[in-house]
Length: 112
Image: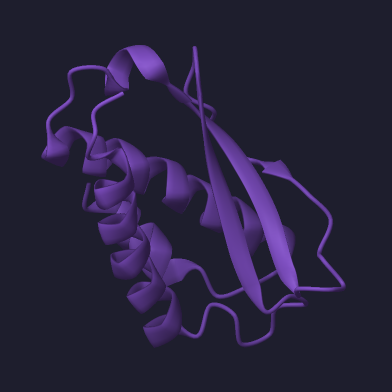
């Protein structure tokens, strides 16, 4: 994997956290935060795998698979787009499952 995958993931996290905060995504959530694990594999998942809400940490763990073949040789911008798509798909799925306000995330997703 390119050495800049953590750097790009951090940028994506910061941008999406802002959208989540500004939109009140977590306001009525039964969890305090969402943790998304990007799993490098052979396909791009449309939806994440949901873990149980952690009683200890208060987060909702999600995992979503990304196609390694698309990430190999990707530029920073290409990788950023792939990470954004995966993160937004995960958060929108969680928003639907827990009846959260995810419209701002859908708008961001539509702009990609």
